[in-house]
Image (tube, rainbow, N blue to C red; front, side):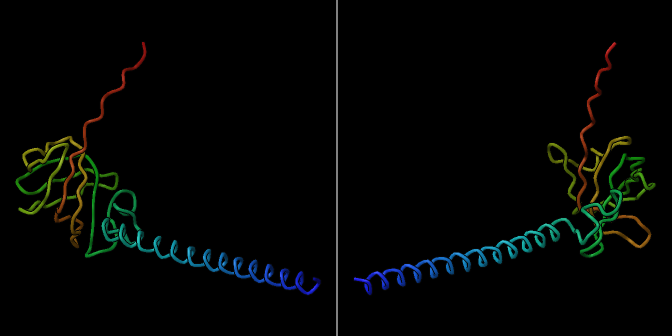
Length: 151
């Protein structure tokens, strides 16, 4: 009877060891999978936004490092002259060049005729050496609704 109890204890210890080892290996595998998934997500979003450390619009809303000279600007439209739009940004004026492939959006699809002086737009595209942008996408920002002041 004593030998039987010993074997039961040995078997139970082995089962606990196998279960514990399986649990440990499972958590290590899950950690590796989570790290790989996080790296894949970061790479996906960096490729989608042109971000390589400078954010979608780069430093202070302008620039956006990475990709093939990705760039962007956000600000009020100063002027529109044919396929050239000048945007006032906090860092100064930025010129955006529109092309036939530039996608212009607002709550519905837009055209270059929808870009008006004083509107706020977001431009993404290829940054030129002179600081201007060959626009790939322009999003017209909605005009904020004025908040009434209490009297």
